[in-house]
Image 1 (cartoon, rainbow over the protein chains, first blue to last red):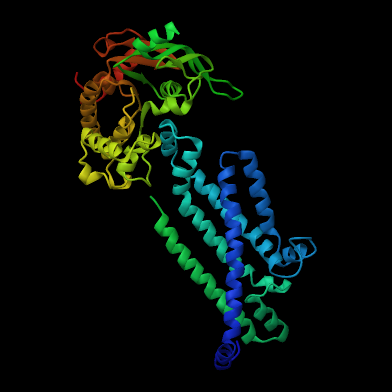
Image 2: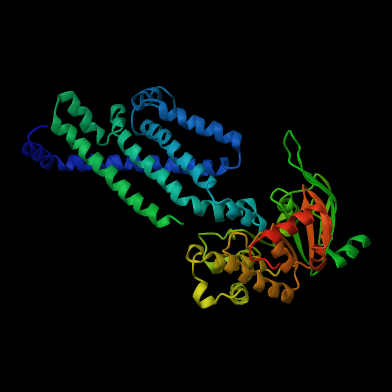
Length: 214
Length: 260
């Protein structure tokens, strides 16, 4: 590691730039997570009682997860409308990565309800929709949130690579640091990214515990 | 039409030569040619070993299962023609471990069917209070608790209150006291007997415990491998010669502490 004092002074000198990149990074993660949630949670609710669709959709989400992130960004660039250089392409890729943890946890959470509770709900004359929204969903919320938490942390990490296709964010420092062989530059990207991940983990973990019903 | 109203007046539930088989390759028959009528106000106990088809019979009544052959009539209508939601809202259902909603308070659990039926707030609140008192739980102490803050016996009391909430004419109970300790169990059985006499509901009660059947039933139906093996009121049941009856009677005699 480079001498601490010069590292810190680098941080101090460039704090406006680092702050700007951090905000860009947060924006990238937030937009991607919101889109991923709006796709994965309803999809998870939809596939709960449809085994054929479940295998297909989780399979597809799984495949995206196995593609190395740099490769995925590369693949997306030539695709019209969603591709190209910049934020939009990065968001598409980040959404694809975030889908699986959210989808899987939504599905697992909705499936993992005490069968006696579901039997009672059905026997009381609740409709399928009522059982889904008033029983399954609230009871699965903590598990769904655990998936969102995992996805958020993954996304914060992968978003640093998005700088490679010109999406901005903290990755910009890291790539520049690698090119110039400058530890200070790399750390200027890596440390805020790590702190962001820790903060997200902590905050979402707190929310998750509050929502847990035993 | 005439026949329909006639049945409605006498028998609230009727099985007409009902068979049910599981819909897989083996098509194993779980219920075979069961005919049975349950008149208004009766507490019918379905007794049998595990796998004898008791629960299946119960689920055929509220349309959670539909017969493969024959008909099940509830309040004069065939279950295949009932809207399942309407049918079930008129039938209380109590199961082992109660199946209370863990994210609802006691109050919200009991108010479930009234809320589905869109009762107004005052009427629901009054009804919940009344029912909690009926099952021996002080509303001021219990209404706002969650199911996890209750003992097994208290949870089962809430389960009964929830089933009675919209005042259904029929009550189905699937081993409701099966998971309780013997002391609590005896306590709830005694209270339930009094309650059943007072409420005049038509009750179908599933158990594998002969003693419970003798205590609660106005009539016992013994099931063996999906068929009715014997039907008798409790005072005559033990005198029957059927081998399955004898097997159950023997279990009573070998049970330590049972009256000789």
